[in-house]
Image 1: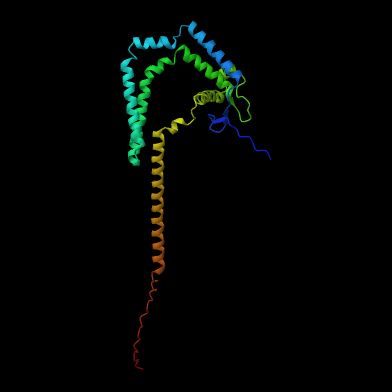
Image 2: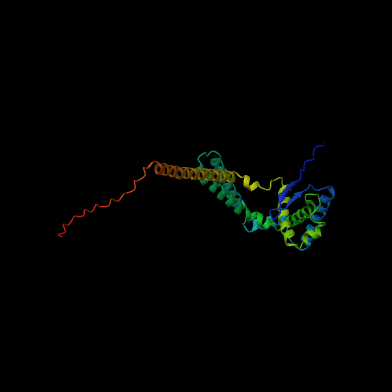
Length: 256
């Protein structure tokens, strides 16, 4: 009997959390089409006066948004995050691990927000807008149902999707394809050191709670058994018998 061929496509659940969709690797035609859409959007963006990456960097430097101070603060935040990650990696006490996990999360979020000073404006350049168009085109080509059929027949149908469920799927699929192309798993955020540590702490709390509940149930059961045993061993009270008082009749001498 021939071995069943393993499906190597990446899968993910749709917005309904029930239907499974698949990401198929793009073929040569898909890649050419994506590159063409990139070039088309880049030219259109230039004509409409949208800045390029280089122009945006110059603007940010002129306004003092980025520069030596920005780089210095970013380096400080990265160092702080690395130190907290090192502390977390070497912590065994679960209560301390929970505390450090929160600190790592906050440090990572602070670094992300600081980098947004640069990445936010850069998301609106010719290159990024064109790259988004390329990603959307690939998404329209790569998302399939279980039987290998494309969800969208064309790029235009992807952009103009009116079905509410498929429109929500388009947003989810775009993220999944982006992570796929970057070599990241869908649940990569769940695999960060702080997320894994917090999960370990939560599992320990649940385990201790279950043990405490079992102990409490055992105590209640033991008390019930003791009460039942005492009830069986306790002698039954004898019923009280009421004695009737004897009444003695005195014979009266009746004189005839």
